[in-house]
Image (cartoon, rainbow, N blue to C red; front, side, top):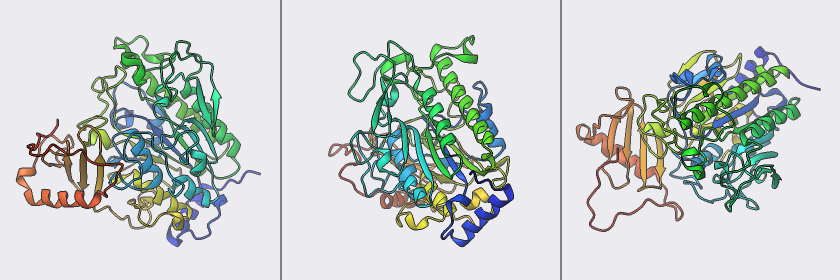
Length: 473
């Protein structure tokens, strides 16, 4: 028998859980949670963040009916580490997986899914994982997810028409044909029959259908609008261009826009399915992106102004590479149409959901995140980060720190630290380091303390005697 509670009841329970610590809270009295993660979607790719030519009415509706964050950050500027940060609550100076590669989470790593399982949630991941490979300890079903469908490997996820996807720990064959398929399933299909995003969308709806009578956590990690890097300039793979077919645009830009609008369509379907089951008002939905927009597969991020007012794209630690859309909707609990400038990041998701569900005892005591539940509910005092930190280990290495209005960037790692006042200079155009040497020194100290040495993740070392490089643009 389905258990439905009123909007007022949900709010009262959320407040009780928050203020009393949620000890012993029954899962049946807590909201369903859906976390939707787009792949390489820029800060400016949505209508509610200023997009002018790509249509996203359903995601815009999430913002209209919930809270839109203006200063929320991804875990990293590329895929795997960003997802590791989201799942485990450690920033990239301390996380186990800090870069793209073939790394696998370990049995001792604690994920958001494991924390929510402790609260009695049914847990499902549909889409892209990137934190464990076949037969490893890092597969989702060994990291807290009761059900998984999609891609394990990030290279496999480039291909929107693969020959298989994973269902739990087994390969589910598809009808596509991919000549010369790579070791991880990557490649370019010559017979394109089953579009992976469409299969993922259907699986997400099916997971909701199966679990509608009990609390569930759905991590919907979409691959759109990532490119198929193996397809070169034809990498924006989509079955059709839809409403953009007749636009006088380059083909990759039609594909990019069509992918985003297709994602938006399916988010609308998800909202409708929740409503059909009578659980819409008892479901907390988040929407975000794993990093900034890309310039791959023929896509030009400047065409639709994908990074909006921000500087940089994917692989940059300027805000265009790491500041992302973040929307939270929970009717009756989160104020409709709210806009928050709270400065938060992916490592805050685990403690926020743990505080909501009364499972803080399941969270490692040394994570970097803090709960932003008070911001979501408008109740209680919101703690603030002293600073946020990112480390990037590719392309010459980089690190960055944000403290309040100030942002320090060192990219590449052997370049001088640059300093920006984000309140006056959101585009990070004016380096103020020479004007504030004491502040630069303080932020450099915070960077040094935030980075924990790792045999696997080390900053590139310049040759002995090499002079400091000019900062990258």
